[in-house]
Amino acid sequence: MNSIKRCPWSKGIPIYDDYHDKEWGREVHEDGKLFAMLILEGMQAGLSWITILRKREAFYQAFDNFDYKKIANYDSKKIEELMNNEKIIRNRLKINATIANAKAFLGIIEKYGSFDKFIWNYVDYKPIVGHWESIEQIPPKTPLSDKISKDLKKLGFKFVGSTIIYSFMQAVGLVNDHIKDCFVYKEMVK
Image (cartoon, rainbow, N blue to C red; front, top):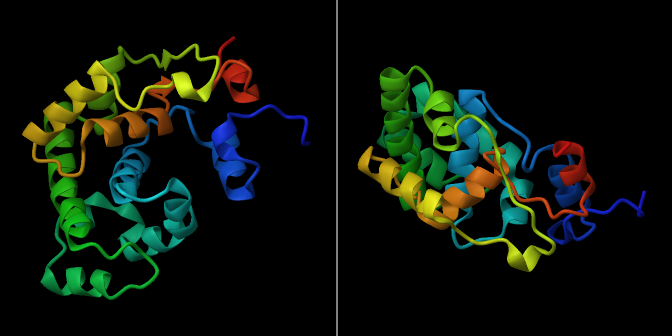
């Protein structure tokens, strides 16, 4: 199994390898999963992704399975409950942003029918394929992530800077940034 060529960021760490092999860069179209990834990417700000992966199950439990309809109605009591939950990232700004984002997410669904339609429209419903030889070539953000970030902020989203949005785009398959000799790249680009 060690002969499998992966993107070097997975580093042979089982939780990273599993995420890399089964999730990262694969298309996500279900609104609930898109919302969860948007929130988790925002939670990662200033931290490593492995920290989020290790706490992901606790996040799902703490945030009602990322049910954006429920989260949009969180009150001060729920915020304090989350602030006291040692299993998640206890950052009041990020928790408040999650609530604001749930409300903005519902607004997008109301206007566009689904967040999936809204977000995938930016790439004409087809993933952008990076043709990178090495991880060092992959940008931290792009003009498109700048635009999406700006648009989301106008719609009331928080913790959606361009770098966070580009990470989100990579995670949910809007962008395929697996390097060219990675087995997932080869599997996805046929």
